[in-house]
Image (cartoon, rainbow, N blue to C red; front, side, top):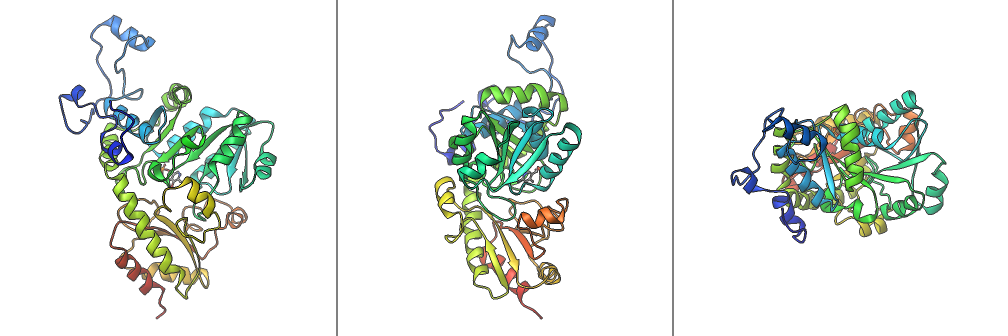
Length: 394
Ligand SMILES: *Cc1c(COP(=O)(O)O)cnc(C)c1O
């Protein structure tokens, strides 16, 4: 355990670390075990009854995973955290845990494709209705709240349009009405944005992305107050069972150590690439939260430390032109996912957002000429040279 007064750059390395409990090991060992033995029958009974500390079974808790959960909780400045087998396991556990049949979920205009799919499933199975809003003004938020609204689900910056939602504003209105605010903080990481500090109730990450940071693990985490986290742990996490594996927790602990230095580089690189794209004659528009001319720049200055590593841009021309640009790239791989060392490019309309019906997609601002770039850690000049040569017609 350590004091919470250390700075973020220190906490990513040390928080949750308990070397003394792990034979003085510098890094947290991988407890690759399904179950734990009880010293006596009585002790086992007490652990099940919650009257004695100790591990029971790795779907309930595991020492490697506990260190990860404590570290992430401290980074988000929340009371407790849970780790999951994927970002979607975290999203589904949160939404199923917080809502009941016939509830209403108010969402930001644009959510991750599979989150959109999950909302449709909840509608079909449990008549849980989701509506989408820009959540941009007090009126818009208030008018979008219904009698049966139990939670507001926000992604900011929104994928892939990079519009930003004022979390403090949303949280202040929701609090008065007893509505929980869930924020998918995958794009920003706690280094750039801390939703709990702004009054939100639950933060979710696809830890597959920046938290892991190396493109080698599928995982999710959530952070909130003790009561809410315990509720979700006892219900959806335990009984649906989308838990993380100890080895994957270890990969995340390893990745986290460099989160702050990686994020600085991702942000600096993205800012330079965005600035260069903006001046290119073949580009119609660039969407980047770190751009001073971003329509939400006042909110961004208030709630984000930097602009992040993701940007989108629209090609002048047609879908076929966009296809050609992507296929001409030599350094940058075509892949979904984000937050890796490698710069990655993808086409939202045919990839991450293909499940969203065309009409909704257009409403979300996802055109056929829109490309999304997850700017990696390479030399920015090399990333830019690759984009530039791909944009040049033969
Ligand atoms: C990737 C992603 C998810 C889903 O996470 P998985 O780890 O792939 O299950 C959810 N939200 C956002 C914003 C994402 O980028």
